[in-house]
Length: 192
Picture 1 (cartoon, rainbow, N blue to C red):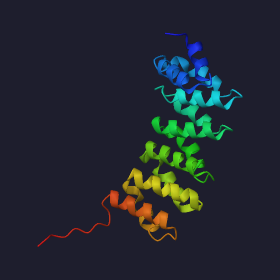
Picture 2: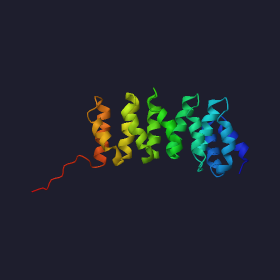
Picture 3: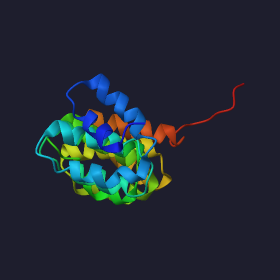
Picture 4: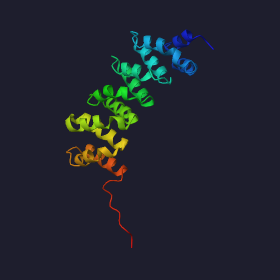
């Protein structure tokens, strides 16, 4: 196996096929790469930072979500998107505050990735999402109701019922989907 420094350099060689090949070998090294990858998160080149985030996504270690949260604030949108996608694979309550902050973002993909990250975290973010439904702006509320619908926690039932009367057809849709997922509001009758 090549040295880890050579493999890390391959990540930013400018050729995606070579970078992916290096990535497949880096995964075997795991946690010992965290520090070199953390340093690459502050590299001036967005491509270097993007590949560092992409490599972090392949490492199973409790420190990875914190590094990915750092990348959510990267100045490059592509790096932020990569971090959002990676956080779906590394759900951690420690990422929840940063993901919640992205729910009102002006970019639809950023909002969706943040919502998906919150769905991956699951029930531990339900109360915060209910708070967004109560006080958030429209875009944040839309992503929050979608996340609540996908999580399917029974504590959301009153909030989802209230959202059925929302003027937004999309919020109403996701509220209905969430209630249906939990089997709430369905009427059962005995066939004759």
